[in-house]
Structure formats: structure tokens, C-alpha cells
Length: 190
Image (cartoon, rainbow, N blue to C red; front, side):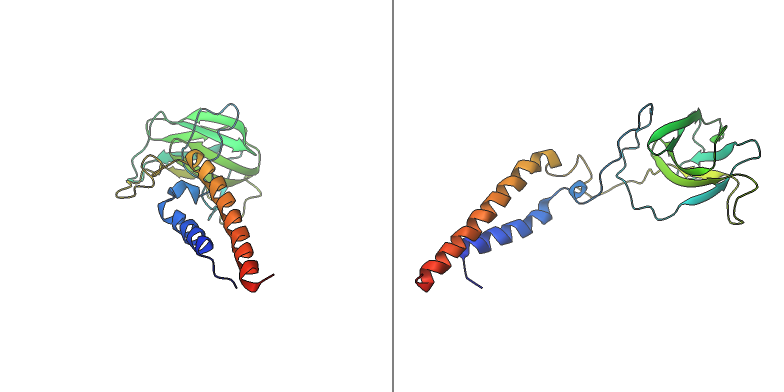
């Protein structure tokens, strides 16, 4: 391997970029709001760790409750049901945070409410597995974020501001590699 001061500088500079990059650059993208949806969770897409099995009532109604992470009901909150990024049904919670979505078919859905997102596998009443729940519990993700500069306002720079820097770094890296090869050829006498 050849020794090249410009190459070493570029390589160490690129490695250092990760220290100053906003955290949203390393996370998955925020899902786009589906057509017809009025709810935007503003949460990055998280790895789905659990899909909740839920049994419909005999008349095809999906029941649930929307609460805060302190288990306080959220009244008059919109709740939407999405199938493959398409709005299927929507409703509003009552005073106790309860909601009902009627005429729901069996399938894999995403339930969305302000600050809450949950993937549910909905089963007809007579076809649900024994572990299926009779209702859904949606919990608003209202965690306090303290001391995390990257989450407040998106970090030092937003991704759109980093794009030109990434392109410039790629060009500089290519130039440094080419310079290193020229230097190696010059040193070897070719």
C-alpha cells in the first residue's frame, strides 16, 4: 500500500464526518403522509419489532384506546387505519380515548394517531389465533429528549445541507486517490 498524505487527510476527514452528522442522517426516513391522511406522526420509521394480532368484533369492528405514556386517555384525537399506505378508515376518540373503526377486513394495517404508530394484523372473530387481543392499545410517544443536540432542530445541519458536502467529499476522495497513484508511480520510477 502506498503512503499519501492527502489520502490520509481525506480518509480521516471522512471518518470524522460521522461525529458531527445529524442523527437523522443515520436513521430511516420519516414515512410520507398517505393520500387523504390528516395525521403526520413526525417520527422516523422504526424497525418493526412487534406486530400486534387483533381480533375484530363479529360485525367487523376494530376497537382500541389511545393513551399517553402515562396511561392518560387522549380524547377527541384522530385515529386512522392504513392499508399499504392508503387511508382505509378514520375516526375520533371519545372522552376515555376509546375508538372504533367499522367495516374492517382482515389484513395487515398501520394504525396512526398523533405521536403514535402501530402495525396490527387484524383477524376475523372466528379465525383469530388464541394469542390475538380483543382491542388495540395505542400509546402516544411523548418521551422527553434531553441533552440530545442531534434531535433538537435536526442537528448542526439538515441532510439537504449535507448533500453538497457529501458530493464534494466524494470528488476530493477521488482526486486524492488519483494523486496517490501518481505519487506512487513517480516514486517507483515508472
